[in-house]
View 1 (tube, helix red, strand yellow):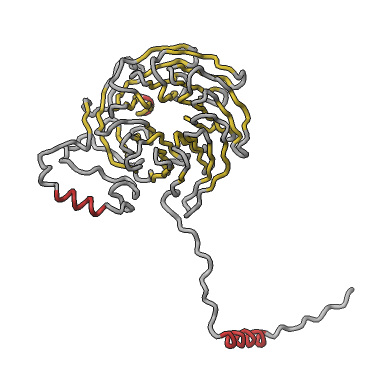
View 2 (tube, one colour; view 1 turned 90 degrees about the horizontal axis):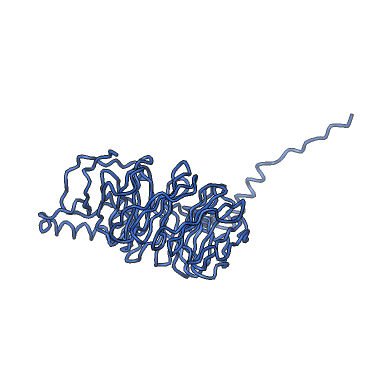
Length: 405
């Protein structure tokens, strides 16, 4: 057995005395502040670009955002609520002309992009490498992209042509031209069966993907149809228009509108559902509005790109943020936490003319709006003059505010 080693006692008193002596020699204790922790914001900071951004898309499982701009470049960023927390991960300049739409695959491993140069690109999300390129996918410039499932996706172009592609074959198995003008938006039902298109010719198209056939076109509406969304648990379809009107259709009643709702905005250029009842819209005036469907109400403003037309809206994977891109060459983030729980009263009385409420701190009139107090004072001073006016929250509707089919 090895002999036990003797432990030498530590003289803590000497150590303490040495510390006190060093402090006396140096004078005061070092109270220099360490590096400040980054401030946590309600939303990520704006992201600025050198060209106008046409399209934005959120990753399905990570805090990642993709953007395509007017020059044809594609950027992928990680985003965070920490101050200066947004970081560019990679960029791609493979498109020769404007990148008009982008979407992540359901597993988040690939990014699909389409361009005015008529090509479709599939990029590896992790490294940004080009995995597949389909050149001259259409005869006209591509305008809209919709991923259907892990194998199928649809594209629409400026001439009204719709194509549905199968990645396993690498070719389109549906090619139909039933619109006279550009396809502005597309959506598919939960069963992945019925694909709906909005078009600049003022009609909504209905296509059966399962049976690979065209079903019908709706009646012509005033102005271009710019956007389409499925609402009310699949019972209603809402289409935005360049005239600032939302047209409502009953499911399986696509031929004629069941209701129309005029929003006092220059246009409704893009639209995205927040839940079964509420959509957010982007307009030519640069304002993002939250709108309840049946009863039809403009609930308030979510945010704005002052005076700059909004190109596209996207909702984050967790539903916390809305992102918008506009001609000001910025992507802005808006807080959705106060919107999803809003319930609109069917029997609400008509109210006198008033400013729309701000639904986020960064919206006009919100807590972070520098001019909020001035606007409130101005509104009060005009209150008596506008007493006889009534715009019912900037809305006019043919609806009886019922939610029946």
